[in-house]
Amino acid sequence: MRVEFFLLMWSVLCLSPCLSTQDGLSPNVTVSDLTFKNMDFAMDLYRKISGYHDNNIFFSPLCLSTVFTALSLGARGATRDQILKGLNLHLLQQPGNNRIIPELFQQLQRNITQDNALKFQQSMGLFVGHKFVVENEFINHIQGFFGADINTVDFRDAEGSLAAVNEYVMKKTDNKVKQMVSSIEPLTQLMLVDTIFFKGAWELPFNPNNTEKDRFYIDKYNIIQVPMMFKEDEFYNTHDKELKVKVLRLPYVGGSAMLIILPNADVDYTEVDEEITATRFLKWIKALRETKLEVRLPKFKMGQSYAMQKILPSLGITDVFGDNANLTGLSKAPGLQVSEVLHKAVIEVDERGTVAAAATTVGITAYSLPTQFIVNRPFFFLIYHESTNSLMFMGRVIDPSKY
Ligand SMILES: *[C@@H]1O[C@H](CO)[C@@H](O)[C@H](O)[C@H]1NC(C)=O
Ligand SMILES: *[C@@H]1O[C@H](CO)[C@@H](O)[C@H](O)[C@H]1NC(C)=O
Ligand SMILES: *[C@@H]1O[C@H](CO)[C@@H](O)[C@H](O)[C@H]1NC(C)=O
Ligand SMILES: *[C@@H]1O[C@H](CO)[C@@H](O)[C@H](O)[C@H]1NC(C)=O
Image (cartoon, rainbow, N blue to C red):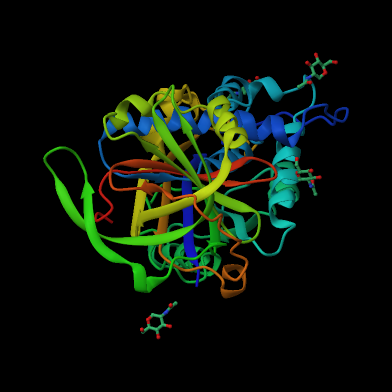
């Protein structure tokens, strides 16, 4: 009984010289500063992605900012500045101390995984061409901060290197992703693979016996039938009258939750698209109140991949993908640049939760009629770690029947 997600991302770095990272004073910035900044990065990125199409969206901002923060440890000059600014992390920097941001990520990672009930694994692997010299300092840093595995492969052996990367991804995703990469460019020198795997079980599972086909209004003209789950219980929810959305928190066992943002029936979701910010998220979280609610939520499954090298330049991350890339902290070899960043995320939302948790359902107040929360039109969702307010996944569902 559980809801499963996994996500993974890899980046091919066709890489190159460098400065040393200096040790600095202990920072006065905290994990909350990091998660707040990361949330605005997520929203910016989300808007760029939604600018490309009207489809379902699903990605992990945490995964992306972690992998790019790791990359920034090998980047210098404008290349590095652009990455940090694009990730909205530049204001957390302190002159002469390059360790602060990776340290915050490390702290956040510990914070999220300290509660073993939440299965959340993130791991990063570096595949380096066998003739290619990566700076020791870079290797030490990404091992130290991100626990990254460093593997040497011979990219001239197309089949062997492909198998090595796919095997790594398979292992890191508990065999969920079998063929992540189907071909590798012969000129590849370095590949960065980041996987994130999260397995959540609803604290208040849905009863599969109550799941029924029902209507979902994609828009005025397109109505589809979807399996709609049902549960009546006490749920934390709120109504943002200004933005005209209803917000519902569906907790997972182990410290994370899904926040569903449902625009009112007369509101076009694209108007809401523009308004989701970190400040607003925190406002919603504060405003949540527990009430008796009848929840109807489509059961859905979707997998999305994004070629991030096409999207990140619109957030100002440009140099790293071109001839101006300065990755001299990663390797002294000239001409190194990132050629591809593939980000893939998959989510499956169904009835499952834990039996034990289901038993905790609390007394329902007599006389109060339940309000309905019917998710039968396009909606947004955020999956976040609650005690740190860290945004792990973000999505938009326009058509729940599309994988
Ligand atoms: C950290 O300290 C510096 C110097 O005292 C200050 O200018 C900066 O605003 C502080 N940053 C945060 C996030 O508190
Ligand atoms: C990379 O950036 C460093 C620091 O700004 C600079 O000293 C170096 O010349 C740059 N190298 C290249 C190849 O652009
Ligand atoms: C995790 O974050 C919460 C909220 O910021 C904090 O109270 C807690 O001490 C943190 N735990 C660790 C291990 O950092
Ligand atoms: C679903 O229905 C079946 C058959 O009526 C019943 O045996 C089962 O206990 C029900 N499951 C739940 C979770 O209520």
